[in-house]
Length: 138
Length: 138
Length: 81
Length: 81
Image (cartoon, rainbow over all chains, first blue to last red):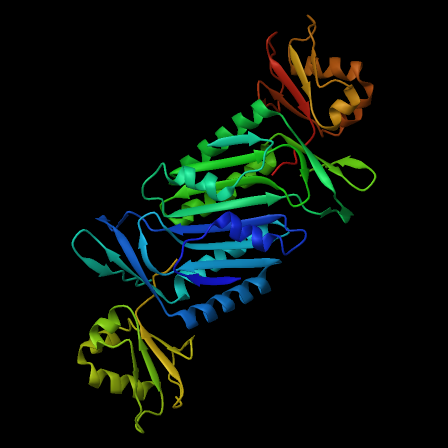
């Protein structure tokens, strides 16, 4: 399940919805990313997260397919927000559902690695008086 | 925060409670373990999870202290249930809170490894007509 | 073809989207040349290989042929998650 | 000293807890000998080194001296999480 949305979400509910679709899920590994209150020693007030939505969907689909080739996965959930997000808000949730812990753990990490590298989102950080595009030369 | 309880819990609420205590948490990695509907090809109806509660607390405290020595962690949460648990119920939640993803991810996995190895809980699995203690010779 | 600009690239181009149709543009390298001419301030970012290109929502690192109905996106390194 | 049995160990001993006080029991090995004598069905599990021992909530793998107010737990390999 892939969701790209402005709104906040309830991780418990979102995970339960997927969990209830399946039998024999023993392990769910999740990563939640939040807006931090500072970055590079500058105090952040909020961010604006821009997205290339059609491409984000296709990249997420591709990442999930690759994870399912590498590990025994029952399901995957990616929720990524965009738009104006205050400090401490959730940005992203990635959850991997599987029978065994190792599969869910490693695939969740793998998905996050690729998401960070390939998902077309851009952070514009708002400080006290100015704003700045976050530049990620990795 | 360590909780050993019979009752189910809401992961979103439990994680938010810890998150709200701190500034600059950017990453929360979580693992949730559930009662599976089968084990060793036998259909499980429910489990009874026995605990040595005082020792479980002291083991969890120790594991969290060790994780905090190895990684930059803001906080850790372990909720472990005991008692009669139906198939698909949550058994355990481990969440690691940190500024950066790597710390939260690796420490969450580390805590789960030690929990599996050292936390004094014992699963008694109930099948259709009989029950059996789960024996773990690892 | 439809061109999309994201993040600070669109602060330079002043457009988020534009339609570019020229018989001279047969492939991605032709398009890059065309865009640098149109937006000289982008040239230094092309030179530093900072920019990313996607054709029909897939990353493209080499030169490829382009068709009139392709969607080409130009953007800086991503910073989601 | 207070002895605690867990999981299928207590199905053999029929007790979850018991108070054992004997002047003969000065250390963990003495206690093991005492318990095997009291519960002969446990002997094979001692022999196979399946059992785990905790003294005052800490795992103990070697022999250590015991005091009258110690809490000793005997249990099979854990299976939580």
